Length: 171
Image (cartoon, rainbow, N blue to C red; front, side):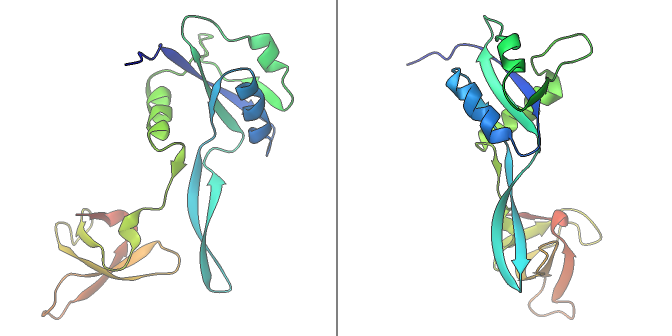
């Protein structure tokens, strides 16, 4: 079993749209990189499709062994790098919540996908709002995917209720 050596995670701020070029240069130098993306639902002429967009435009994260300091002078001189992010105490390695957020992104390979809860037929529980704790199935999804219609009853007067997607979770 391989034991992974401890690493620090750093963040660079780049010129707009140049994240991939900076990432490739860092990988050429031997660093592993992360450019986080998210999937977005778009509709063009009523036709739905999914597009990957940068979650944090202009930012590139990279890991380096914690036993050595990255070659900052070389990294700063890479084309399209604007600055190396650091805290007020001049520490450049990500700390606390920032590090936890990037580690969470790594768990999803840097891609935040559209929640599967927003699909017709998914069994859900309402977790917030006036219908809290109701269970049901999604019967409709608004095109914007910001609201879902939940079937909370098969026999009652109030069978279908619209609520924000943030109010439901898959069960």
